[in-house]
Length: 158
Length: 458
Image 1 (cartoon, each protein chain N blue to C red):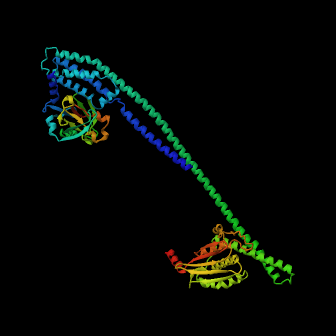
Image 2: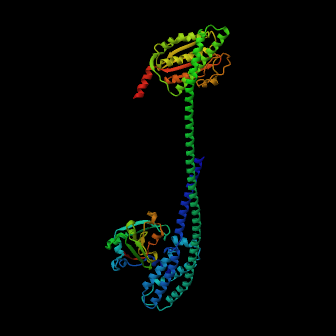
Image 3: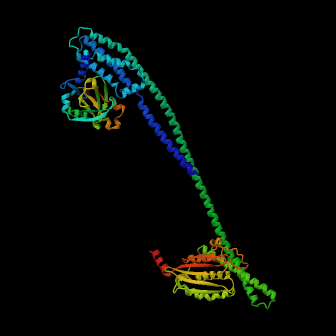
């Protein structure tokens, strides 16, 4: 029984993936990969941190990670007006969202929650986060659907 | 009345609009409460668990068949784990609580996962030969059916909530329709009020026009009357007076005493009648503002002194004396001399008329920095308090118990008032019954008049 708790604790503590493994793919509009990122690479980008609530947690948490637009720019991804993004998660969740969200708001690819990396069980390693607490208009189901956890890839589709 | 009604209707309109806004807000809230098609609602997550469990089952089977590695199993295990956490936290947990579905199957599943956590975490690269994985697989499979039931329960609860909401929405819709109807009705009432008011304004305008026409007609009638007075009354009266004067002067020889007395009576009364006509024409002119003042600067003291012999000649017949007491030198006023004499004459004659024989009428002339005051006081019968305010009205005569016929027309004081006011002055009166009456004529000092004229010209 004791070793079971230990194992469980270990599983929570361990990041779902190593820091050098690719965890995020930016995919071009033609379907070909533009650039992939490991946790180290994402950490090397300018970090943004804010405290916000969201409908999937109780209370609030501090989330940090690179701005989504910074990642796309770093990948050299064109960001044409009116572009749609197809976001895919490890759990097979897929959603299309407007690119303007990334330009209008400080949307981040959060890699840390309250300073800790997030395991797959804790919706990691990457959770798309919006500064909901700072913008009342973001308290909306359409936005909730875009808080993609276990983020795997992002593609500009049009 | 219409105004109050309009305010009332407007007030109700505001309340109705507020109610509509409220109900719209409520509709918006309730619509957003409907979970239809929302991929982050409770149904989504509960069916997601079902899906993730099937994926784990599939991955485990693949693993036992050597088609996938332990990391794949772990990934699926972790995804299912994370999904189970989602429905225990935040909005999703709240909604599930509200649906009051039995969630023991989820708790049981989570407990089962925790129990097999160490097994999954430590899955070897090569397929284990013992039965632990098979047992785990068997356990997973037992959850398929209960999870399906839970999904259906949640779906049912959600659609029940949706149904209730839809019914509420329908109710709100009905309410909104009624409210809108009331608003329309309120607008109709407002419109009707507007029309009514316009009609009323029109009517009162017509009434005013009619009154104006009547007034004009009255004015025309009056001037016709004045014209009749002037020509049809005065002209024959002048003939009568002329004839009587001639007869009295012996133009037709001497009359017997009795005839002479009758002739005197005719003469006296025709003169009285003539006086009345003159006064009426005078007041008419004054009222209409159709008279010209030829003003000049005169010394009021000198003017009164000049008139004094005339006053005394008239007063002598009543055994009254008129005494002038000038307490100032050079009381300069700007007046129409002829009119001023008329004013003084009128007031002094009145004073004399109401004085008792043997008494005196006092004229006091005083002056302040900007006013000249002429006070004409008698020791006569006095004027009752209630009559004082009316004595300057046309045709008003104090109903005197004094049997003496004073022979007034009731127009004298009205003429005085109009004339003095035309000369920028004012007339006032104080009186005590049995003690006497004092009239005050107050006129601005000439220099002050000149000054104020200059100011007005600037």
